[in-house]
Image (cartoon, rainbow, N blue to C red):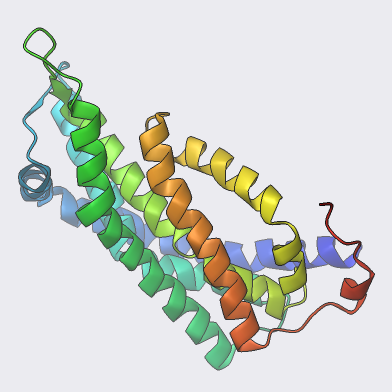
Length: 245
């Protein structure tokens, strides 16, 4: 078995060890939050200033279940990240304090991304999308679609804000060097545009920009962090051809 395949197999085996415990924690927390989901939904409505409706018998119930589930993931994100980093660090010998700092950094950045989205990006995006309504064209927002829109948008921002830490990790373990990140900015911009289109709940240019611009700034921040942390360069890095243009 080649080294990359062997590392991936170790990652999967380590991940499998914690999945049952993590799954039980998510299910248990979801059940607890379900009984508070009404107040959670009211709080989100008041923050974003939207009146919601439902168009199916099961619509409100499913909306509360989804909100409770994503609320559980939100609260348990440090545990989820610990499981992920524990599995990722196993093949590369990342343990102890290094593992702790990776978990702490990504947890902080996740919550920072969700707060940024909730306070800045999400209200602006909703106001922009609803600005096209008129006296003849009024918005009646489904509660289930509203919950899906908000939770997916918030989680997407929380996940992309972790990009710099994963860049540092990949450089420290010798997978991708800082030079490779610097030389492939054009491909990074293309990948960011595609990722923003996939992660935003609506394919409009405004929401894609609201996600794409911070994501590119995070990419550049990752390069700076790699430089500051002195992550090692792969031995064959000097052999890389210069970028065109």
